[in-house]
Amino acid sequence: MGIKNKKAYRRNRIKMRVRKTVNGSSERPRMTVFRSNKQIYVQLIDDLNGKTIVSASSRDKGLEDSKMNKIQQAEKVGGLVAEKAKAAGVSTVVFDRNGYLYHGRVKSLAEAARKGGLKF
Image (cartoon, rainbow, N blue to C red; front, side, top):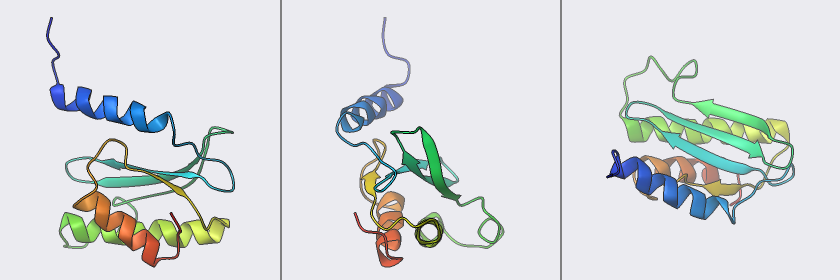
């Protein structure tokens, strides 16, 4: 009995290994990234209460219709989530790359969020 989707299985194992140690609170939420083939999504989650504080994605208004590549899209989303987090009163977060490697779209989103004022 083999594993049907090795890539998803591997990512899930990495995800669970990271999730054991990375937890978000209301003053320092977990910033989690989900990357699909076309879009990128990010949420700030308070794990103690089980609530999403702030979310942003490449499908938000103003980002979905413009012609840009996926790395530029991720930079815009990182800046947007930093802006929304400041409005919600969040300045520091714990970064959860969600099993993805820290390069490409995930890296550009994180760096844009840092430029926007989030500390992690």
